[in-house]
Length: 131
Image (cartoon, rainbow, N blue to C red; front, side):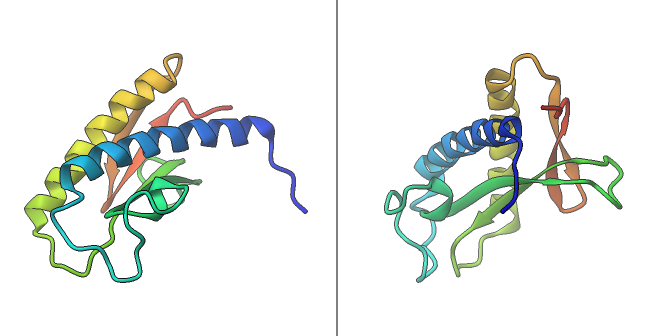
């Protein structure tokens, strides 16, 4: 059995709420454009927006070894389809997600200075991450 600091659990739950809200907005806009992967449940069929529909969004903490930014939350953006999605559409979706994420982080965590930066091929939430 492991112990998880309740402050970390609360922080990550609030972060999940941010991603769930973004998932709903992005699904509304892009969810019908591409067919779902055959093993992926339809939108709303599970209790977690990241587990169904076209998009799987979330973040996981990384200590940032080898990153020019260091520690942060690595943002996961995945489209659950077997269809070829053009690079410009992927870029458009990523930009919308990052814009929504920056806005919602500011609203959900108003006392913290956080930002989202591209880190290699991924995005990372950086800034005041202390619990």
